[in-house]
Image (cartoon, rainbow, N blue to C red; front, side):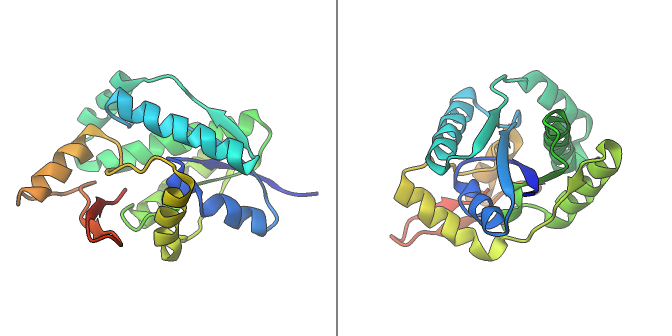
Length: 202
């Protein structure tokens, strides 16, 4: 019997490699879009719509949390300014594990693991902690070598490509970094595109 895995999906572009890769390994893949970190709401809608199109194109089961609990997210972030990325991972991975349990799925992972701009050791630690708390096994993969493939595929398929991780703090640091300020935490450097322009990572 094929093992099912629920993959927390941060966006369509970052799903273009992990979902097919898991399928190739024999998993029955379902995705879960839960990202209250995304700001502003128009950005959230763009990523949600793009993910809905990805699920349709791929023919996979997709679960979507379409609410927008920005206040809860900001409350958590402001209470943990020094560990806000960890708090964000905890919020999203816990929601994914709980959803997996509701759907009788024993495994979960996240598309965040394809990005070289995310904190992989921290994601793995948080995933392991969530596993212990929920009983749903966290699967860690390092898909970073195929990061550029996600950008290429997204452009070919016409998926919306964002320029920052999503949260308002990351957006602030993106601009501070671009202006020569000190960007920390989730701030992202610009990545050259094939056409010579620049793209920020997530």
